[in-house]
Image (cartoon, rainbow, N blue to C red; front, side, top):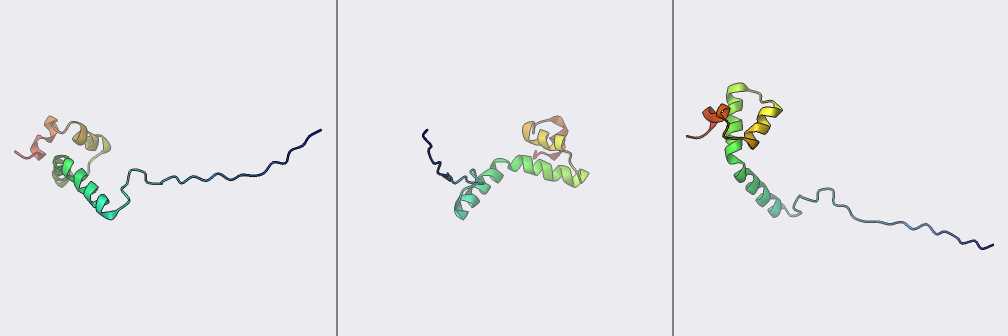
Length: 79
């Protein structure tokens, strides 16, 4: 009978824990600026809504970003 010795082999691979986060501070700052600029109107509506209501449930927050032109947000949009 033939026997073969098995040798343990450890495989290693780097897995980035934050694959969508830019690695340099300058790139992170630039990306944050892009996101905040793109979402500015929704963030303004959210802030104005919170000034009136103090809290906002998840459904309303989601709606601000998915249907910002909804009639219920009219008082909080820029005219």
